Length: 362
Image (cartoon, rainbow, N blue to C red; front, side, top):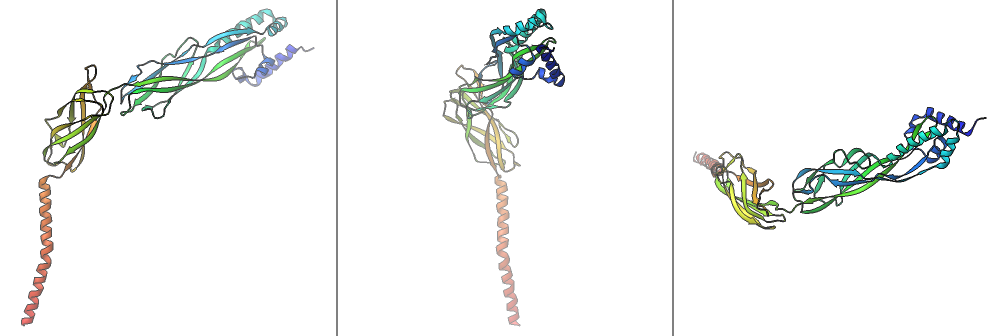
């Protein structure tokens, strides 16, 4: 007579031969109850926390790496033994107490993986889409983290702070998905272990601080300069930042067709919202092309801690016109053409009149 246990073992063998993938796949609880012994229910799950593993303070224009660490502080909160399943296998002649206890220990050890987070994917985004931060790589695959452990190395998200960013604190959202082993069960007398999993997600937040500091822009450039000239250009700078810039010195850096020995101008203190004009004397080559040129500049200043700082590179646009000699030459050439244009009809009329007079006299 075939016992229920024999039918159970035959079913297991058929399932193993037909699909080995079932061992590692998600399995319905009712199916597991039919083909395997689940001696324990272990309670708990992973739980991840995030924090920055780098300085949270950045400056405008920074290109940096935001290092985010993840730690798993998941806990096993308890477990419960299935006494009926255990007693049933104790009495089974093909399994027995010794084998059952071995399988129980194996399953309990496996069930302790309930707090491990596997296949972690982390996505970083802006809470406020208008935040002045560009997340250049927003999704990372991070592997696994066991309970009580953290990432072997922090997740590295490259970011850029916009040049015109306002000082303040900005929230970033870290959305994390992972799977964990919810339970396991063994198949006496072979000892194969079945696992099933659940997907989880968590949302965490980190903050980025953009510090108060001066922030300069070129407000306007004034010049009246032609090729071959030695003239002044006036560049007006405005402090659009949040802090006073002390003892400001404006500097320019010129390239062909410009030269200068006057590349610095003292501006003094510039308060937020205020502007100051720097005057520089430059020389323009005789053969300079008539067009708009960009001149590089920067401002050196002292901050609230009396430490020297430098602004980001600033561009001033200078329009170069044609030289006076070229203009005069063009004017003379135009005058000659005009005189020729006017005199030609007069000459032709005079010639025709003379010929008519000669015919009349004949």
